[in-house]
Length: 216
Image 1 (cartoon, helix red, strand yellow):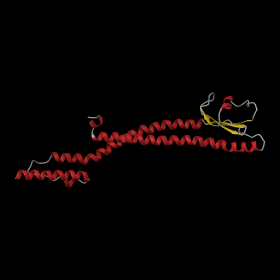
Image 2 (cartoon, helix red, strand yellow):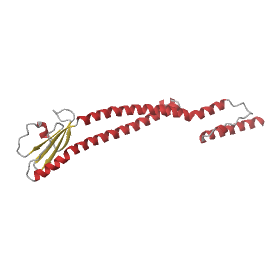
Image 3 (spheres, helix red, strand yellow):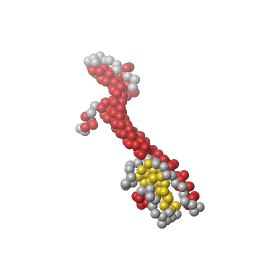
Image 4 (tube, helix red, strand yellow):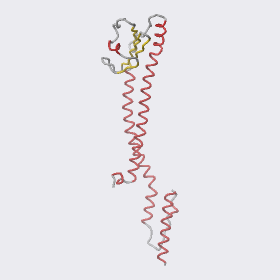
């Protein structure tokens, strides 16, 4: 006999409800996490897309691009043979094209975007600490959603199982009160669920056969 078969029907329904709740909660948390990661890339695109296009236009015209120099967004232009800007972290010069995070030597939340334009490179450094903090809150919220989702689903499943099994419990009580043959007591009239009504009809038929057998 398996461990699951030893559980009562109500507890099995509660267990399956909890597993379903946890599964749905995990799907929701995963979707929220994916949306947050996509939002981070969207923020980076919004911050640097316009400047990168302006830099391409300026370099195509033989001019030096004008890039941001704020606290949360800074940009640098590296031309061929030019020394590294004094205010640019040296680690950025070795990065390949694309978006980078968890950069050695820089604090968490710093992201770099590197774009090559012919022999030139345009590098942006962004401070997205606030977005990283939102991701931390999302992780905590996701764990709570999974735990609470499983708990609420288990409690709801147990309550619904009790409501669903109440007619069956009543039918069992009626069966225990049945008189001895040849007397009969119809069970079907009080049953409305199709499955329980079928059980009641079978029991009524069985009572009638027992009563007929006693008279023969």
